[in-house]
Structures are given as structure tokens and as C-alpha cells.
Length: 134
Image (cartoon, rainbow, N blue to C red):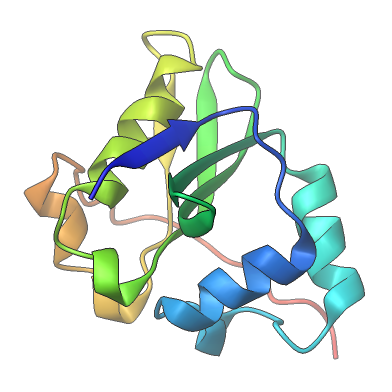
């Protein structure tokens, strides 16, 4: 298995949705709203991808100022490729695009909470979310 990583290879909304479904994130993302997924990709300013040949197997999608903070909104890896270093490699690639002192911030999906401490993330106790009005 030879995985290739890119920080500048565009993906389509359909490719992103397909990967979200092959990872554990589809249940937490608006995969049935193609326009919203398209907007998520269009407005992210750092998208790193992992490919096995022509198949998208991982995505790190971030919103960042590149200097102080980077919100890693989606780290999705196809379940077949999980526990093989793809997620770590995507995070490392993301870091290479940022200032050396830029912090990566994320909200872990419940199924992934145990993953992040293993790869060096620190737990931060005072994150806040304001849900959209219904």
C-alpha cells in the first residue's frame, strides 16, 4: 500500500461524501445536503488529502489563519485504512503548511476521543459551542 499525500489536490463534494461514509464521520456531517458539503469544501482554506492510487482514503479539512490557530474540522480516514498512520500523516502534513507555533484545535468525535491523546494532543477543558437557532 503506497499512500500519497497532497495539500493542494482538490476534491469534489461527491468524493468527500463518499469518504465520510467510508469513515465514521458521515453520521455527524450533512452528507445528504450536497450544497452544504460543497460550501464546506469551498470555504475551507487548508485541505490535505491521502490517496491510494485514484481512491481518496483520507482528508484533513481545516479553517486557519496559518499563523496562530488552525481549526481541524474534519479528520476522516476510510475505516479500511485506519490504524495505519494515515490520520497522523494528514495531521503532520497540515502542520507543515502552518507557522511552527500555530496550534491545531479540534473537537473530537465521540468514537475518536481516545485517538488524539495517543498522537500528542492535549485535552482542553473549556471549549464552547453555540448551536444554530432552529
